[in-house]
Image (cartoon, rainbow, N blue to C red; front, side, top):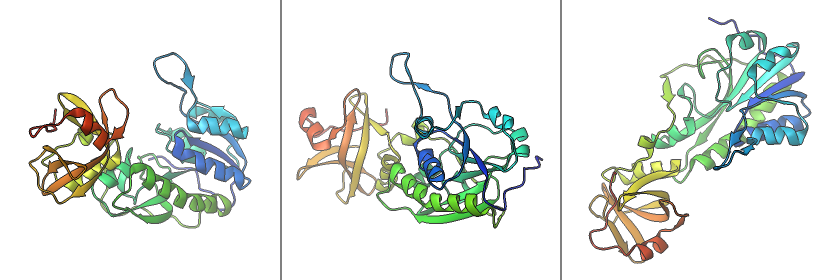
Length: 304
């Protein structure tokens, strides 16, 4: 078992910030705005965008450069820093932090779930897919086991019926900022070991997003709220980006135009399509798509 570096009990003198995606930008900017010394930002490598060979910096790297903070793509560069008064802040980094680093530098992490429920890669997505009505954001100590560290601060958050991953994650991100600033300003004042059933938030796969029209409307709408949910129309993949529930009864998967709405049969009701995306085409209003698709009484979506 790794002996973790002791967490600070006073204001962090220096911070190494570790994160990559858009959700990790606001905490970095908030720390800078509060006057903390960010000695280094460690982030993911530049990714190739599109079909060319050109690479693009990720959101955290772009923000760090704009703020004049040194950037590294090698997590081991943390060990080259003076550990005295150094605190690591981790937000959606996505890579393992070695035992050696955790022994020398105390690390805290923003995690977007009510731990120990939804430890892992996709906590916001899994909370929505499972129909959870509440979730939370936690500041935890980074430990050797994934998302298993003590909870240092937390704030709960209701999940609204129309929340997408983006809207819920943004709300959780805003709740996290004062918790993070408080710990970095005052040190750790409480450590609570995680208790309860551990539930793992596996990475979202295509199987999770493939719509089965025999499912309930609620389950299908959850898939759509997670993003990139899809079905098949005339043998081609067909994404549904926005939809609502109706009480109209239709056979599963059957498409029907009624009163200016495009409805699809599901278990106990139907789904009203709002924004859709046929394969290889841009997003369009469902009514515009239906007009061009020349639907018949037998038109339907399928599993493949």
